[in-house]
Image: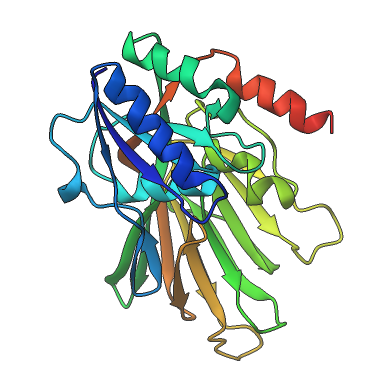
Length: 286
């Protein structure tokens, strides 16, 4: 690899210094390195870059920050095939491949193509109201139906491949990718699955039941449909759907949230075959 594009979260300490080090190091090695400008806000949503700013010959996108920064960068690059590698400037995460102390040896490996590509599935979610799609977005981690400021639980039905499965009274439900199985889904009691798996994990949030509300694991070709219902005759307007905790869209009783596997894959550069299991072991041993 000789052509690099750098995206950075400048809210993290020492980011500017690290960006300068990367550019100077790669340039000294004869590579080209373009730095993205500061993040911009669009209707309350932050973007680190857009595809129109990236040189066409870019071979690698380096992302400085934490897992959240990499997830946002993946959203910004939706529809492209640029591989991403994360430089961790935050807490121990699952997505960022490189720590600061290993920065230069890792850059050397990129320069000699000593790496492999790991593809991660994403979700496509559509909010359907009165037969019309009013919102469509993708997620690398999860799509979540949740209540907002109201203390009342939601009522919603779950259908898989157009077959009714169950009706929930709960604070919501998380539909997670394997990548997202270590995020909000895990906090709600969902299982950890290998991030390269091709499946969905559905985990209810604080479901009202006398037995444990279990997670449901489905193959990635499943078609998931959630129907928001009125509760006790009250048409609650205090629920929303979030896409990777970023794009938050209000939903109404009668709305349907349709979720399936997206055609887009996120391509992550990996230097170590055991990186996820190593990170998982460190997390579990704390």
